[in-house]
Length: 438
Image (cartoon, rainbow, N blue to C red):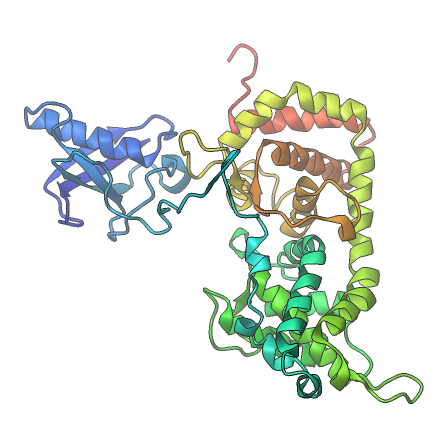
């Protein structure tokens, strides 16, 4: 792999004061190496000491400052051009790239640093910001002016209670329902996928139409960061997990308002808490119509994970770890390895597994199995990194892929034997296992 690097003083942007060619082998270096090596080559060309110039940024030809922890061959190919800005130092890489973390305020306790709970974002869920305050019934507010805060808090408590299951449902349905779903769709749900969820959950009925469910999506889509503010039948608007949770509350309110009552009993929605409506939606639609299929798939995969399969996975653990390492877009020193599922998907495509042997809807169930240790969605826990795979997660994902392929191909050999075959295939594709004599 060869990269052309143009260098210029810090602040000059994409100017070309000096150009060097870097030969990078297979390109497994990170961009920090590109900046440092290019500056060292510049110093050599000018007869200066090696550390005379200090890199400040690595940029694309369009001037975008890049994260220096990105692995070169994950984003670039041989012949691409990069720009490096340098200064006299002494501090390197002072330019900020998008998403560069800032030093957080530390809190210390008796056991060391105190970190906030991983579900803090949901505990702080601002129902009013998502329009849930407008769903609290006026009749209840007239009885108690302080009822608004109570109902929003109890609605948040319902979301916290079912957070693990709802996160899994979102993970599955964000990749369902379309033939053109791509890796980039992961973490966001569009209107077609929301409709697919509504259909499977059997929300419609009792005076509530499936078309009315679109209004719940439309109510939250403009509030989701990165989504289009305009919403129509051909829109590309999408919602996040937080938006999905808010949409469920809107859906529960609209469904209750449209209920015709049973046996002539009048509709009591005007005197029912939003939290109660949300619980009813979960118990009458999601629990009987969505969660059993998830539980069925989780149970089958877990039952197939025999002691023999576990033993084989343990024997290949080091190679499994190395295989996941090759999927990293970024490589940060001393950081726990967690690889975004989207980057893993890019390698599964290269290995001719994803979109060949299985598709993204299949992978959605596999990723839930990789993250959850219980079969029943009601017992699922909210995952702090729902699409980031650590070594344990990747090992379970590898088994889930094997189980899926074993079923689809209708292989007759025992699953443990086939697992060894798939593990060897993945290790060789990842370049962490070489053929004998190579």
